[in-house]
Image (cartoon, rainbow, N blue to C red):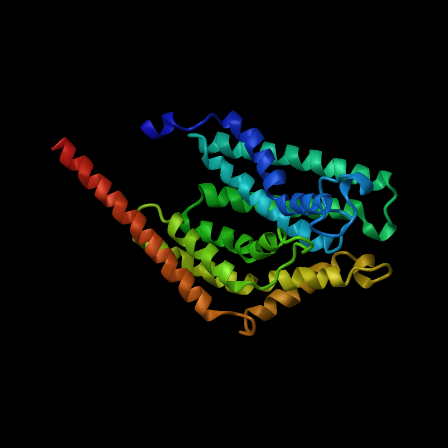
Amino acid sequence: MADSEYRISAWWVLPISAIAWWACGFMPWLAQLSYEVTGLSDGPTPAVAGFSPLPFTTDDAVVGLVVMALIGGLLAGLTARIPASAGAGAGAAIAGTLISMAAAGGTSWWLAVRTGVPEDAGPLAMLVVTCAAGLVGLGAGLLTALGPAALRGVALALPVVLLDAWFWGFVPGNPVSPTSTWWIFAVALGVAFGLAVDSRPIELLGWLPAAGVVWVLQAAGPALVAVQENIWPGSALTESPLSAVGIVWDEISSAAIVSDGHQLGAWVVALLLGAAIAALRLSREASDEGELSEAWA
């Protein structure tokens, strides 16, 4: 009851989730625009090319849109945990994210069509990709915020795998594209391990399936790059967009049986780090409960 008194109203989640999806998720894109304006990187400045909320027509657009929309959706979904009512928080997070998608996506699509982009840029297709990735991230965020520990781990698998692409997007002139920076996976996953355990150490075992899912989904980055490299006017992928599913499936399914590119040491570090954080949190909770019991005695 006391904890609920300090939680904010679900109405505040509406603007917070909207800001989280665009301003936080697409922060690398906004940073690159600022780099161009200040001269830290080459490229047309927004004053010349016109500002677009989403990078529809830039190089590596497919991978960047998927990564940033998914990370933004995850952050927006996590805001559902802020209010006392989980249902109201989830509803507000969903509404805020959809409003942000409509505003940013619609504006970007309109600006792209208005400026006469090349036919192969496909702003409408890019909008569909952005919305789909954002909804996947939103679902992962809601599950992470409100679901049981085991499902939180599975929900975080794909965002953790794509996390390094989001971070590398802050480097001036660098595209938002996975670079197989495995140690970021280990740190992010380890911290998530520890923070997701509520009160029972046995919940750590629920993260073992998540580690397996992350192992397989390490191929998600290369799969997105493979899809992007097969997009050009007249290509089979351009004629049949559904063939992208086959490319992604081939890349990811091979990762389940091939150990190349996987870092076993990273997962050992992740599990140990998660166990350490969980043990620290649980010991502090036990200590606080002990002090409370003594105070009541």
